[in-house]
Length: 418
Image 1 (cartoon, rainbow, N blue to C red):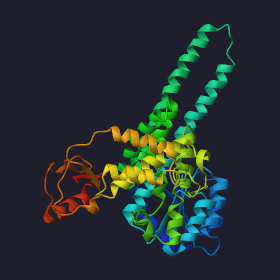
Image 2 (image 1 turned 135 degrees about the vertical axis):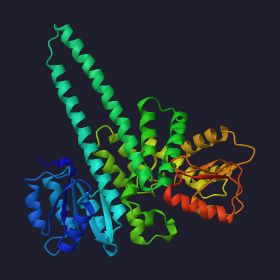
Image 3 (image 1 turned 30 degrees about the vertical axis):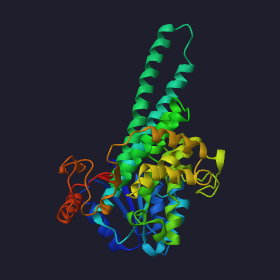
Image 4 (image 1 turned 45 degrees about the vertical axis):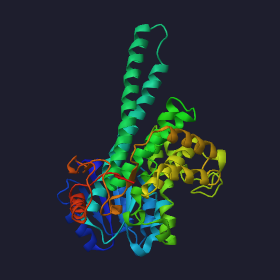
């Protein structure tokens, strides 16, 4: 019997594309089903469970957006990916909204990137199925608990212990789910993963300052860790552009990432509150943000906290900006983009953190320049030491660092003396 958790349906009217995809996946231990007709593929879905559907956008019989929308009605749990030419970016956005696709991939694709995307999609499908299993198990256990006879104290005690065990399992699954999503972000873009971790730390500090407690604190920290999860559905070349360099279509696509993050997380049990904060972290206090143009208290407090932490980290990432300069910019944005109360809390919290005698600046790898001095050791993702603290960066060193980064990525920011 085939393992349906690794079954992939490929749909494209061009046989050569289907053949290329089959060759690419031949050694990946997937059960691959192909069909050149969207109508026939829909019939297959009625009796063949699949975990992943990959469809072309431009097909004469039916476009990919319509096909995936109909496929979702038959098998809503299946992950959906669409293949599209770069010129079809508006159609891809429609697929995200109507067919709720997991990712879209532009042609021609990179084989390694495509295989990594497919693996992430299959892992996400399995994770969602496992969380649903645990949720269903909890429902069944609670139903059994209601049917217990009050006089059977021993039975009540046995069920109570079972519920405690199950709760611990669900808690473990909750944190495991968050770690998996963070790992996906780290794999997709190491700088994105480092940014998420720093925003999570600062968001929890601000939440404590704003007198949030208990589970509320955990929700804010989790949402801050995953606030940019939707960016894994956006092409890297768009993410890495400055806002001023993006075309109108690219800007519109980029601004979908909070809604994409919400769609990803809201389907996972126990992450519904986290997903709401993720969706709202780019809303502005004056109502000029996105995606829903919320304002003031319409924006959840946790999202307003994440917005301040996110803005502060992005300011420092520019390089050459001190903590004092970053706080100055936060004050300027208070009342427009940011909540003034949260900004005041951030100023108080960050001002209390002592800085070293020689101020550090966090910069990206691409912003390193000759004669900069490292404020911390420079290590790769696997822990390989490339240069010690206080080393002076020379042109030749920069070239070697970039070559090492291609083999063993440098995660997060690089710290130099200002």
